[in-house]
Image (cartoon, rainbow, N blue to C red; front, side, top):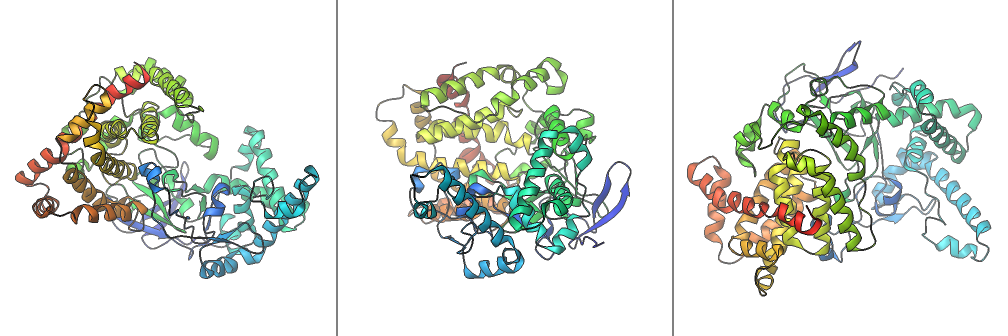
Length: 580
């Protein structure tokens, strides 16, 4: 049996009766520190998901970046320009950004059977499409890019194929737990899907299905339990990642570490201080959800019941925030008031009200579904229905409790796409102050950094429109927000927020993160504006010594007071558009 090698800084601890194998650190780490990188030196698989295959390099996972219509995209969707990909001439399924990437992928898996498997799947799809549509010639089908004409195997099936053609990867995955018996007995429908995926992989690899089915099903089960979803909708990043060494890290709903994906590698960083010999724990799911949703998700995919302190004591996000041992890190953030984090301005904790907990369970699935509607009127009506469903959470001022946060985020997107940037800015500021720091008390957590970047972009968008928006008076909420913005030095406010973003980007993700480079570009533009030498010098002084009395007062006047003013419009925006 091949042993699984852990990267430097980590080692396996002796198995326990309740936790199985665990991973511990070999030295101490501080919040935001890089604990380890999981690269191809340890067998791993990283593949794009099916919808994004034509826009993603199948080896380095760089994503195509459009060079037009940037201003029409919501701020969180705007990306830099540069990556282009071309399809493999053999299978026309995998795509590559360079000859070097194609060569590397060919040696890794594509040339070991993956390319032929993808080509067989495509040929079969073309044949089926031709027989179903006699009116369309085969030549037209060959040149079509439609999903009906060219088969793209499901992401789990493509991942399984790559594992099966790589002996070292197969041997490493073999040591993982798959919970096959529990899945077979407890979820026949999912079991049938797993069997179908295994049969498809073997069929298109040209292997005997009968002889190889048991092994392929076993690998599929292990893939389902041990893989990571590297999806990031904001940056169009997608796909599945599995590394048997990383899969050894156990779960907790109050984790001390987190994982981010940079190209083909996974990066493990510390949320808080981790002492030498302490176990590393990450969250397999969204740990900010209510306990019932967390337990349901863990049981469905990972087949265990979490007994971490947060689950045991049924702590909500506000209580979990109070437990975070490094709240003082927020002194350099949009929420430097530590008393507000330690004593949140809410009417009650969620766990103290059983009726409210039941209400959350009842409305959660409806309020977190994608907002549908072919018109703005239909979308507004649906968001209004959800806003009303969250009335009990609103009355308790539990803005960081799902699904209320989700409804606010969806509303923010709604206003952004409609071009009502002032309303979107008010909601983004409100979330940055009243939700994000409780859901993620560490200031370098990715959602908080991304929210700040959204605020910076919206400040830039509204700055150019403020004067024209005030032409007709201040009768609407949107116009009154613009009036408030006209009293603010938006350039300085935006510039300071960008400095905070750039400071935390490496810990939140990496310096390869698109947000980091976009923030630097926007900051460069602001700093190069003529006549801002004095402002630039004061901002530099604040960043160097953000705890100084004069510097803190400057920050309060330039950022904290304005952001609180703008956030103060958020609930009015919601009630005006969606009703109370």
